[in-house]
Length: 97
Image (cartoon, rainbow, N blue to C red):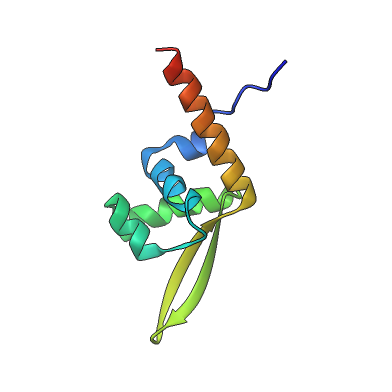
């Protein structure tokens, strides 16, 4: 029996799904780039990032750039795997329509 892909409620929220989609295609992205891409406030993005980090899906990296602290974000291997499984499940469900 083939394992059924996993529908992941942590990833499924629209903002978190967009974050994972962006990060799945690159090694890392700066906080502001993601914020601007998904058109949310800093506080809303921070809440989404915290949930992804608590699930073990996201790894933040802080670095000073031009004297200012910047946050860079990347998906962990577990995050990449969970996102791929979630997309597979969405694709399977869409195919049933």
